[in-house]
Image (cartoon, rainbow, N blue to C red; front, side, top):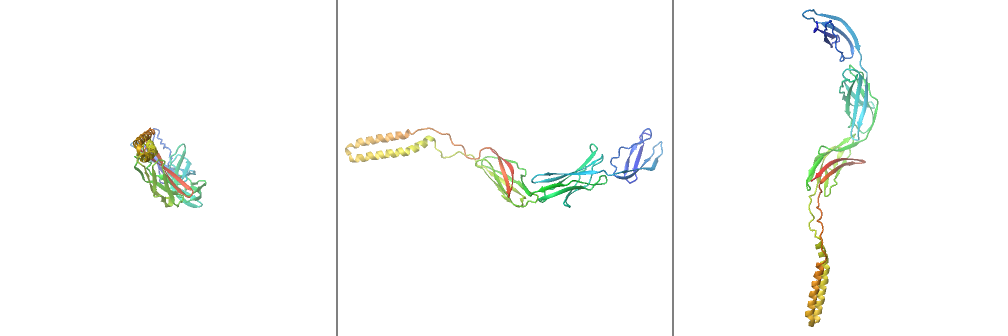
Length: 346
């Protein structure tokens, strides 16, 4: 007899499973945790084998499975630019979790719905969850409840009131290009990388600007304004190549030039003075010319001894190598939001 099989039937139309007979002719099913709630009548039938004929017991075992009570909990995840409503429907039981739809309401009006993700039992408890993105709600104050309508196995339930105060706002964020690397003199392009998104009914204009702390470097945003705070922009950062300062003179030449102007004038006056004396005193012409020559040589010596020296070459002019943070700012009346980009200059 071991190995013979007994089938169990539920007279409400659903199968109830089956079990093998043991050596004593007994059959015991596993726990029927998936039978739905409601009234049930179970019968059994043995179809026989080579040694025994079939038989059945049409006198049913009657029982009723009631719906399990549920509790619905509503929580929120809110930032200045987003709002998620999270729901958990929980029941004490060992079957699959509650199924169905959650309705979110405020002031008697349904704001939206979300289907439950059916959970599996754990530690004698089962739970299903749902999430609703409420980021596009209009600005204002809400008293939100989450309602679960129940199913064949679980009763309906409703959450407590969740009060929210939503203010119109917008977000500024990069859309995937976080860093650019360029050589000095090149332009870093963050094409269509800045996204501006409205939240809670924001519809005014947003002005976009950018700044970078690198010397000899500029940046711009195009477009520079976005109406309705919903759009995409490009950031361009232009660097300058590094070159040495041209035309700077060494220190000794600068001193020579500054001293030469004064000393040359002095010598010129001395020469002219002695030339005048030479005209009036022709008898002493040779002596005066000799004296003038001596004074000219002395003046030149004086200029040449004006001092020497040298100085270090000036630093190169251009965008220094390094890593910089480019700050993109979105501004509107009383609202400002930033997002960073990275610029690497080689």
